[in-house]
Length: 116
Image 1 (cartoon, rainbow, N blue to C red):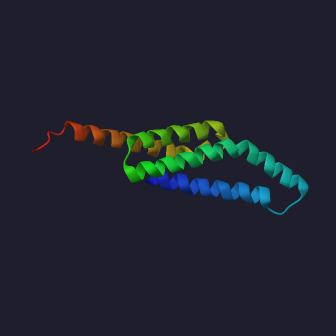
Image 2: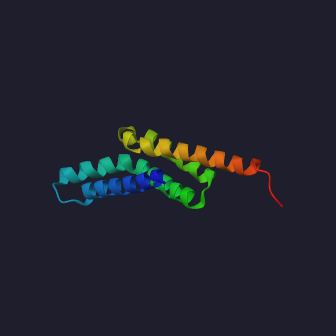
Image 3: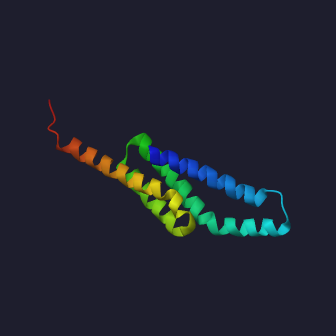
C-alpha cells in the first residue's frame, strides 16, 4: 500500500514539475529547453504512471500478478530515466516485498487443509 501511495505521489509531482516547465511563463529558450527535457522524460513518466495504476489495482484486489507487473514497470521506469531512479527506488523495493508477501499468503492458503 505504501508503494502505491509513493507511486501516485511521485507521478503527480513529476507531472506538475514538467507541466510547469513546459507551460510556465518564461523566455523562448526556457520553453524550448523545458520541452526538450520533458521529451526525454516522457517514457519514464508514462511507464511510472502505468506502474502506479497497476500497483493500486494490486492493493485493491490483493493480486500478486499485478504487484509483480508494477514492480517490473517501476524497474523499467528507473532504467528509462536513470537520473530520477533514486526517487522510485523505494517503490521498487516495497513492490517486490509486497509481491513476496502476497505470494507467501497465496501459498499458505493453498497448503491449509480445507474443513468441510
